[in-house]
Image (cartoon, rainbow, N blue to C red; front, side, top):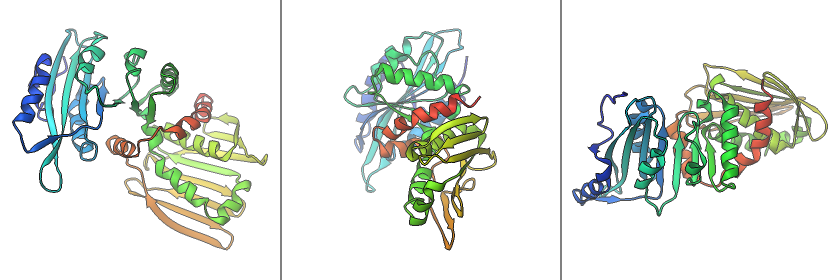
Length: 353
């Protein structure tokens, strides 16, 4: 059986049947606090050792995102079937006065009883609020229709997947089953947000816009762990440019531009760098570059053309998952651009063998 080293971050241990009553007592005991919730935020992992770290993450997220947080860790290898649960509240000062608090319920589920994820845990959601579900790790068989039909927004990180092709097939099936109602957000896509803004800004420059039809090379540099983020960034470039994939072999892709020219793409893996460390776009007598050093909170952007050179900087995306989730929650939206990019991304992913 998996044991937590300490439950300090999880709060007060309670019996499952007593959760609602104990939460009421928690608020009655602190009249200076206001319970605030804009959403149900559910974090699921099949690695029980992440439960306390997830509680620390919720403490940070609730500074800007008031919610009812439900943390679930599933110890599926346990021989005995049982449930442990805790309650706590994360409070933050508002204008130096009254605390704004978000309540948290945590569950550690032992054993392989498949129905408990829905029946035990979902009974403790606020039914009037939308459900945001952060699935950590691979999609297991518990990611099934009776679960994801309940979700308003699904957050996941495909960089955690050992088999991305299988993971995206499951995702596309879930989107089909929910008729597109469920908003999907991949943190691998979020990792390129400021890169995409930077590239769009570069091509607002008249010299870059003039060189665009003559682009002949693209280089994407990233950590090998973040191959999916690199492919998603490349798929975005292909989609927005109206280019088409002609052939792919390992880390080299041949594209055809709208003008019929050949564009050669190289994927370069730099494991000592940032998750995405660089993007270069080249044409005759022209080069545009966006780059970032590991740990640097800023992107470096440059254009070099004949008699024309500019350099400037802009913000970079977070490296950690919690920061990426927070930034994604702050933007909201339907994530339609991600869906538009998926067809080209799937071609790159399926052709990568």
